[in-house]
Amino acid sequence: MTGSEDTLVVKNDADEHAPVLEAFESRKHDLRIFMQGVLAYIGEHPRLIPPQSQVIHSFKSRLKDSEHLREKLIRKSQEGKVITAENLFSEVTDLAGVRILHLFQEHFADIDEVIRSKVRDGDWVLGEKPRAYTWDPEAVRFFERFDLEVSEKSTSYTSVHYLVRPREDSPICCEVQVRTLFEEIWGEVDHQINYPHPTEEIACKEQIKVLSKIVGAGSRLLDSLKRVNDTRG
Image 1 (cartoon, rainbow, N blue to C red):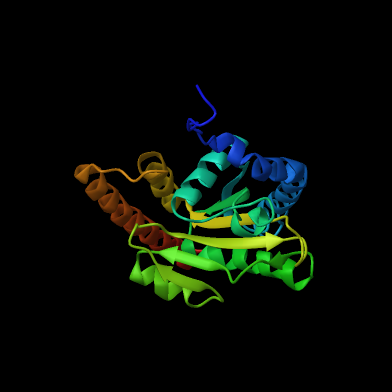
Image 2: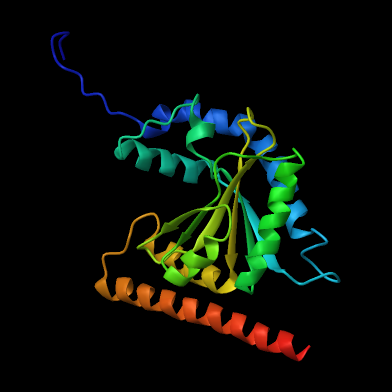
């Protein structure tokens, strides 16, 4: 090979995203501590658990691992979105996540109030206006009663998302997802089949839509059962 010959350079995605992954690793401990605090505050709040009430059914949390973050960075890059070490924590807001599950839709009001009370006290700051995603027009009407940005989703997804930070200028952010147990079932199934790449199987697409309708009907049936039971009490 002479000096005049061209050299083939193969771009290594791992090397390209190394600074971003290092920035994530440097904040991972802080993210975990804040996430655990958010989970404990909501999940163990006396207003939401017995003996005062039984609002929350269950809760869980997850901290994104480096490999999944790398995959997301590659997808974003392919979509034309450049994520750097400098903008990572403003552009990727689901590095730490908490999920709060409840049985009855009406109990969402209690969970929403607990989160907003923490914001009013100055302990948390909302990174943006909380968002409610749903495909169901009846659910749209329900969520419009709250201070939420309501979006109808063609993907049959239903959930409410909050982005909370310990202070306004903090890079640390935790995404809080609130949904019913029925909606969680749909979300878990859809995630396994449709994420990160949507299924191309027509049958799967149609059955996922049918499942969303069953989930919506199931949630409404639970609410009806609760109202009947409450009138008996």
